[in-house]
Image (tube, rainbow, N blue to C red; front, top):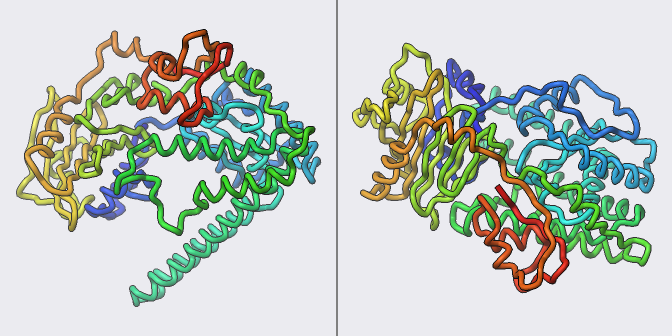
Length: 499
């Protein structure tokens, strides 16, 4: 989902270079801080992007308004669904009444993103993605997310994080501007990062505890938080197999504590609040509200189907190599081969029309490019160029292809250059083509459909009805909160993904 080219504007004139190793880190770990890349399509917030109605008026500030616009742009705008908005509004009202600050105002915006995420601004603006809503199995799980984000506001965590970010920016600027000792500079910046990470972990645990208490006092099942955190962990595990390039393999400076720690913490806290009065899950109401919700990516911003990526709005498609798993992230389309020996990244840049693609590849945006390897090409009628780059541990093949007014980059990384890695790169680039009118018209989003389990249905038979998802049996279990051995029963209400 690459934004049409705020990235390229940053590249032009900044003089920044992208080294070979960070390119791979971006490709494998999809870190937004890597490289100067954006999304294929910038979403412009409009008046139609209506938030869930607040129970009180949230006082806006210039900073919160700017951040709100940035969030809408980054997460596909707001998702309009009156049934969901009504459910969330009612849930928030119950949580606010049970909180220690019933005078605090909140405004919830549902984001049109398949990512599983939620966050809060200091003013009380809360955000939850439709991907998170689709993953939750009942109202108590949703309430655990909303109460957790409310806890960040009540405990002033969001405001503290803003202050920490400002302080870190000052430290970074002062240290890098005034210090000529690279070791001293690195140590100072590392200490700043560690302080912020530790502070954030403490915040997350505190927000979990406060949130569980709020939900329980509102008579929601306090174990909803532990169940949903478990679902999040299992959902993340389905993204990519456990390889050396696993995006979940973050270092100890990660801004969030490990999910198993949070699950244990949430379970311990829930035991303190467990009572007959605090056990409402309200699964039926929740499933009725999320029936027909869009699941995964919105085709208007490009989407993955198996090894294929399609962007109906921009009118192109390509197919990744065998044994590659594609992920359409906020920064680029990322592909990782099973086992982690190869990776690929697809993104967009703005290159002046008068600059040749060969010159662009050699312009210094990436280190290690072998200029003598640059070759001008034509791929399915589109002007293109390729080059080879070398890193300490990875070998790269880079392609730039001009499509309309934009230039698309394919960056392939392999631990060892081989005939296979070269063929994979070449065949993927050669698969780039225009979509036909019929393909564009047929591009529809996946949706969640809630159905009744019939006699004879099993997890396996129901998962076979799932469309457009990888690991359908595991995905069915995760979506419905079923562990590895649980079975469905007749008349159960379950979620499946349909086209």
